[in-house]
Image (cartoon, rainbow over all chains, first blue to last red; front, side):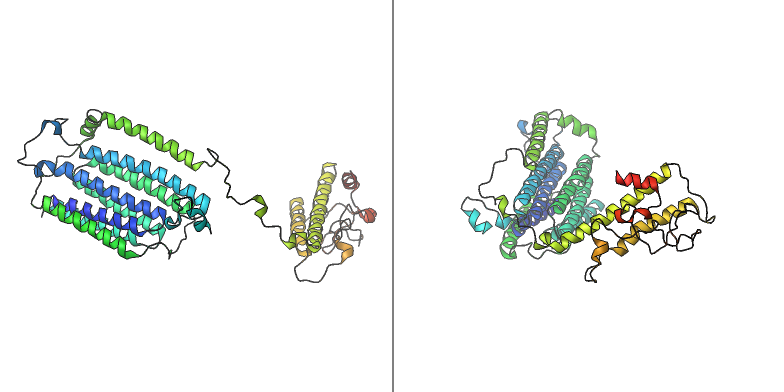
Length: 123
Length: 326
């Protein structure tokens, strides 16, 4: 099996996520693009889990790199990232809904980041 | 090119293609469903790479929870069903940055893993993952549980407006509430509403009088012989509902007779008049409870209230009259 396939797929997914975050104005769509980026990172982790032994053939193993006898921690990291993504989506959607309750809109260009932006936005 | 390679290529094409639709679709809901397809294809990639637990957790958490949360947010923010025209910024800077990132990552990863071949790992079991999580990675696991708790509390605090709320000095005062429209103050509307209320009260009084008459021990006599008591009651209820609507004022219609539409002098309701007392059998047009030969039988066009004061002798039921005078 070629190890390059999942890596390239993950790179393309991450690039699409970056494009979506920069392109979209709706906050919910920005969250979807962030999910795509996190998913690409997960794919990188799982692919490394499966292929890193073959990729590091000939490299002198370091003692600190093997906390367990079978160094297959990529899947564990992917699980952790999934949990982090779930928490991020929960808090992010709470923020978005609160903002919608205040302003009746979820357009990111109109978010007042500073105090002096308030008059310009609401005016 | 093995079977696993072809499978990964196909799944990767599905994932990347649906991700393109996620970031370009003009429909909010369609973007959410394309995200489902992309995440599902990625779960398939995890399966091919031998990480079963991650694949199923991906389907459970991402497809089952995160996308549902996103669609809930789409619903709660009143997103339009159709395409949204103002969903995107100008495409050029985003395309430049995104294309640059994609090109850089692709070149880097191809250069790093170009000739690397690997064997399909043995089928993973939950035992290995469990040993690692609760052995080497138990501290990050516990920290992650605390983070989940913090996210839960934070989401609740953010969602409840009464926690830590401060009065906003810039908020509009309550006096900005628009005043009630002129139609609320109109005498015509008031008079019309009073007429409607009077009519409803009259119908209620009549029904209550009938019920009191029945409870007083006056069973309806079967004079007709063809209609059962339930039929007659049903027809009466039908009349109360539909005749009241027909008799109601219509917009743009001719003005009503003020004598019959004023409060205290409601319209004549059927079943209470003494007109034509000689008739003892209800015909097809009669919709009233037959109460015997000595009582007047209603006619379809009669609309009177049993409780109207100026038509006291017209009341056929003495207990009904007592009920309404009290």
